[in-house]
Every structure is written in C-alpha cells, then in structure tokens.
Length: 332
Ligand SMILES: Nc1ncnc2c1ncn2[C@@H]1O[C@H](COP(=O)(O)OP(=O)(O)OP(=O)(O)O)[C@@H](O)[C@H]1O
Ligand SMILES: [Mg+2]
Image 1 (cartoon, protein in one colour):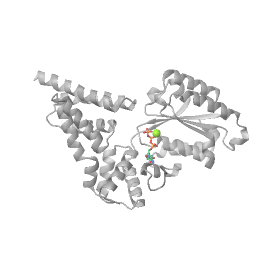
Image 2 (cartoon, protein in one colour; image 1 turned 135 degrees about the vertical axis):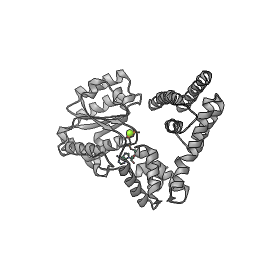
Image 3 (cartoon, protein in one colour; image 1 turned 90 degrees about the horizontal axis):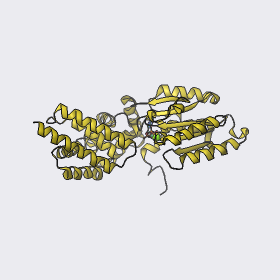
Image 4 (tube, helix red, strand yellow; image 1 turned 60 degrees about the vertical axis):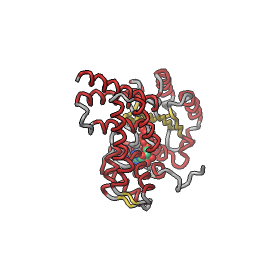
C-alpha cells in the first residue's frame, strides 16, 4: 500500500524530524545538541526507558542532524533482536571502515542504531562489545532499550546513558492539541487530559488513542468519546475478567480476555496495565489479595516486555489469579 499523508498513522506523521520538535526531554535534547555542535565529541549513546517516549525518534533525529539528507547512507538502523543482528553489524561496520575519510564530510564516523538491544543474548552482547572496541575510529553506536539492566556492564560503561521516563503530562496535552488542530479535530481540554491520564507518560499511546477517538464521532472528541474508546467500558470488562479468574472460572475469564483483544484491539501489555488499574478499584478484593495479585501482574508485565507470546502469558496470568482466589477462599 502506498504510504501517503492521508493513510499515515498519526504517530508516524507527527514523529519529530529534528530535535527542536521533540516534546519534553529538555535535558536530553540539550546534551544531544551539544554533541551535534561538535560531532567529534559524541560518545556512544545508550537510550533506556519506557515505551513511546522518544528513544527511537531521537536516534533518528541525531542521524539526520549529523548527516543531513543523505543520512541513510551513513546510518545502519537495526533491530537487535533480529537473529542476524550481530553479523549485519559486523559487515556494515567493515563497509563503513572502508569509506574514505572524505566521504563522511564533517562527521568523522558512521552511525549504528541498535533498537531493542536489551533483547540481545549474552554472547551477542560480548561480540558487540568487541566490535565497539575495534571500530571506535569509524563508528558510533546508539543502543536503545527498555531496561538498561539487561545490557552488560562493559557496554554500559562505554556509553553515555540517557534515561527516558514518563513524559510530562502538560507537554503531552499541548502536543495532542497541536495534532488535533492540524487534523481539524475538535478536542475538548478535558478529553485531552483524560487521554494523557490514560497513556501514563507514553506519547505513542496518547497519539494512538487520539486518532482512534477522532474516528469515533466524526472529528469531535469530548470526554465521553475518550471514555468509550479507552476507559470505562473496557474497564468494566476487565473487572469482569478479573472476577471470573479469581472465582476459578478460567475458561470464562479467558473468553473475556479474547473479547478485549478483539473488540478493543488491546495488546497484551495494555490489558495487563488495565488489570493493574482496575484491580485497585475492586472493593471486594482484600488488600492482601491485591498485593499478591500486583506481584503476579508485575511478573507477567515483565515477561511481555521481553517479547513473550501475549496469548499464552495472559492465559497463565489468569490461571495464577485463580490460584490466589482459591487459597484466599480456603483461608476464610
Ligand atoms: N518526546 C517525544 N516528542 C515527540 N513525539 C514523541 C515523543 N515520544 C514519542 N513520540 C511520539 O510517539 C511515537 C513513538 O515514539 P518512539 O518510537 O520514539 O518511542 P520509543 O521510546 O522508541 O518507544 P519503544 O520503547 O516502544 O521503541 C513517535 O512517532 C512520536 O509520534
Ligand atoms: Mg523505539
């Protein structure tokens, strides 16, 4: 399908092309601009933090700013979880080292962006460390990950580490208003806040919710629309699912889970996140149960970020809820 402005997802359409367009992250942007003023000073970088906060975006901004319109020639952008990842890196680094100095212009190195680098196995990371050492004259790396703890220490210590946490809600609201205006969508202030509330610092999530809400009622987004899209309706269903799981009706709970995935298009992580939120609203669940269930949710949330299969993990999570429901029942 041809990608044009009409069909483009808003998250892509409004992905910042340069550092000045980036929302929030002032300190990070300032440091990066300092490197850009004198590229020779740029170390390897490690971007770590929660999804949808601008890690990949900033890496691409850097590539554009360093190399201009031909940035792709001098940039290798790779998903590190790709099986052939490390071999590709090795080959391209070799290619880059064969380029003549003059080919690079003002920037004395090529750029290698390794997304999802926390998905690399230990041996792959050791190999990467080796490549970073031998290629330091001709290549700079930007490693991107959710958990820096999964990157081996010798690599971390070679990088300037930037941490990305939840984006500022006010800045997110402003950005949603900006997009709404560009798209001729009427967005009430309450609706904008509700979306941002729901997105919990993840701007990708917020923009996607905005786009979904815009289709819902012909370009007018009020709080009610937002609730229908992201909030209450699905919240009730999540509570029903938790209820069924706790009372041991595993099959019914699982049915609800598939409904949530199918009707609302929620991903596994989103459902887990909603389970956490809804759990604390459920008055008949005891504080002890809540603590134990939160613990379990945390475990499965982590597994999902590690790329485990959503369907299987959510089913297992519901089964764990059943166990907690059962033991608590026996204690009473
Ligand atoms: N700080 C930001 N400023 C402007 N837009 C942003 C920012 N963060 C995220 N976005 C929006 O969200 C989309 C996704 O951002 P990006 O791909 O940079 O997230 P990420 O941090 O790499 O997430 P992940 O960890 O899931 O890969 C972008 O295309 C952009 O529209
Ligand atoms: Mg990314």
